[in-house]
Amino acid sequence: METVPEDPNALTNPTLLVEVLFDSTELFDRGKKFKDYQRLPSLQHYLLVNQDEARIEHYRRNDDHTWTLSNAEAGGAVRLPDLGGDLLVDDLYQAIELARS
Image 1: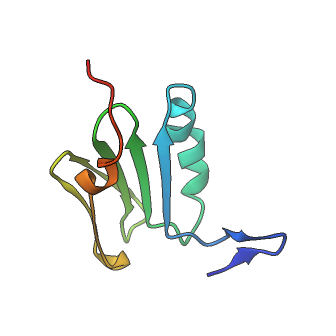
Image 2 (image 1 turned 60 degrees about the vertical axis):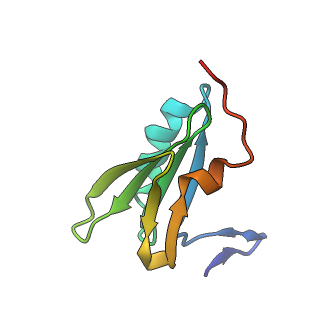
């Protein structure tokens, strides 16, 4: 792990980045921010966590540097074998009361 000298909590070589999607920032998180993140050679996984429903979008970098999208919803999991396991959607959302339509 490499950190920023001024902030030992800020990594310069993350493998996984997670964003919680808010109405006010969703377009930026999906657009320019993700484009900037793709320039990080260490980044392998980009997760977008929905705040309104139990859904996680998982972008995974392929060997040819393209990205593959998969979605995980309630009862599902985000597969992260190279990071040691899976992220269960229900575990992530267990303490959150989602707005009901």
